[in-house]
Length: 330
Image 1 (cartoon, one colour):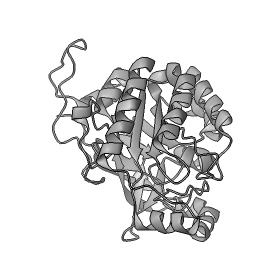
Image 2 (tube, rainbow, N blue to C red):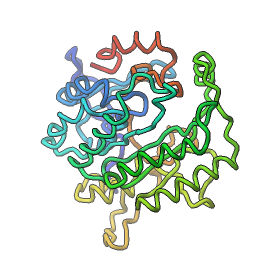
Image 3 (cartoon, one colour):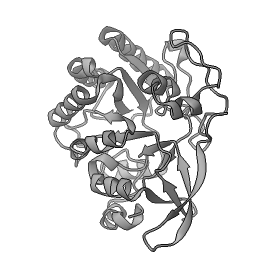
Image 4 (cartoon, rainbow, N blue to C red):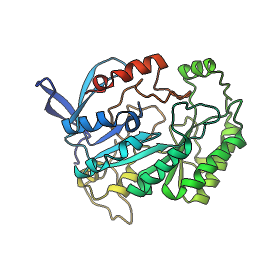
């Protein structure tokens, strides 16, 4: 049998106490905050320390996460420029990694008010891809928003403009529609944003158009954690933490392969036989990702996006960010 995803080890915390920690092979950094943009110093300090402390957002319980067995980091970011100067540190340690890089175009509407200009973000996307390869910098246009200021044609034009610029620098595009959490609805109302409740018919129109673009760009298209099934449209529900991608990009890592694949080797040209039970049951119902451990914290991103589900309010966000070294486990 391959190694378990969440082995437990003893570590020494900053107080000198011996404490139990989980030791995942795959770490997400992070679904809960833009860690590469805002917390790169914290991350590399914790990497040197060998562990992080994670706080459960639902019950407040603390959990130590050891990096001792980690073989792969999956990063999520809208602007990882502050992080990219430190990539050699990951590579010196022999650690694998790839990025989900969200590139939306909501500049005119100010839906992402604290982000750098779009062209600056595109330049960062391109330079990162040239540094680590298009298979490890994955484009997200997320969420897809229709509002009183953006109709379907305008949205598709914006996806097209970005795609024509970066398609040679990525291998896939992941999209999803805005999820109407109550906190998101309240924030939109407060800012005067009138959202369109996008019908299934409109969704199909949008996705079919983006699918045609992706074929022209020769990149794969996926949806992310969508309640509706779009397989008949020709678009599978993807996985941000994806065993197929991991095998393609990191098949030389024995520990990862032993975790993902059955003991009997399968020829690379015919594919690998993946283990059962890889799905991460701790994620949303419609998420297909395999197991990983997130080390981020809600309310620690400063981008103030109108659609964000991870920040409760601007006041809470700023308070939590000021304390991020403690709250994120420093």
